[in-house]
Amino acid sequence: MKPSRLTTAAFSLLAAALLAADASGANLTAVFVHSCDEDGNPAGNFVWDTRGSISDFYKIFITRGTPGGRPNGLEAPFINGPTWAQAPIDIALEEGTNEFTIFFQQNGPWRAFAINLFFDSNRVAAICAKAPLRTNDTIPPFSPNHARATYSMTSFPAPNAPASGTTSVTLDRVVELTHYHVAATNQFELDRVWTHGVGPNSRFDFVGTFTLTAGRERRPPPERPVRIDLHITEVTICWESELNREYQLQYQSRDRREWTNLGSPVGGTGATICIADRVPVGEPQRVYRVIDIP
Image 1 (tube, rainbow, N blue to C red):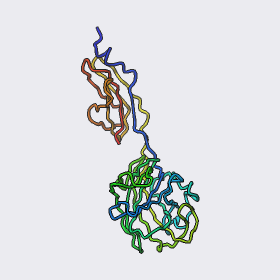
Image 2: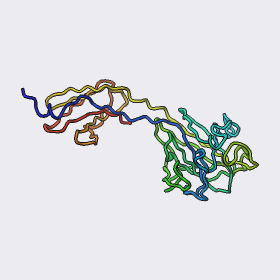
Image 3: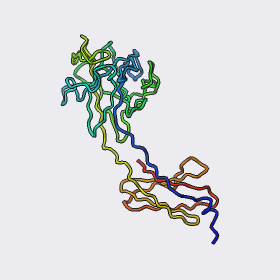
Image 4: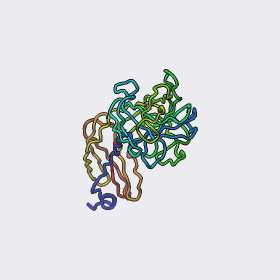
């Protein structure tokens, strides 16, 4: 029997590509705070950050815990510092509650503060929030910041990126900001930092606190060998599936770079799943992959 054109030209199929999304980490790598109006827009244009000597903004110094908590963030040792050059952070978030207290030099009677949180060394903040200044025992509510311009890791010195407008982000797990506020200097009357370092300077500090709740880490997709059964005009793609996961079979033609879905998503059964692809005679060579759907 003479092989069809499909067999000789359309399918070499020496390998099938099985690609899974790269798992990003869940590390807090920078914190910015800036004075803002009630809508989160920079007001007063004053910024504090955890960048090192590459930025001459006033610095933020961070402890673990909350004021009066366990640990007591007002007394706990600083995570970063004591010098300006040691302001940068790289804090791995633990599953569950991660509480932090921040200290930064008071420099004026600002009425509200916005906070930008950066993860995994990204240059744009993934979480942006704002809140009125706390001036008494009542902690004001915070909310997502939707400002059209805020500060990024490349701001020198003006805001140059839109605020994220969200208080949660999905990394290798879901991370959510569940508490944030900045207290006026007369609330705690502490002098632990100065403009660019740890240590007193006879001026009370702004003291803030924020909490990040991190969900359970998502398991990386297991290694999943793909078997291809080649017929005259049909290819069968099989893979081992897991319960409570969804999969999408895709193909890519030799003459196109885009991946195209082949059928609808398929739910995992815990057993082998096979899908047949009937390819019209004359179609270009195809490469297949199976991806996990989050």
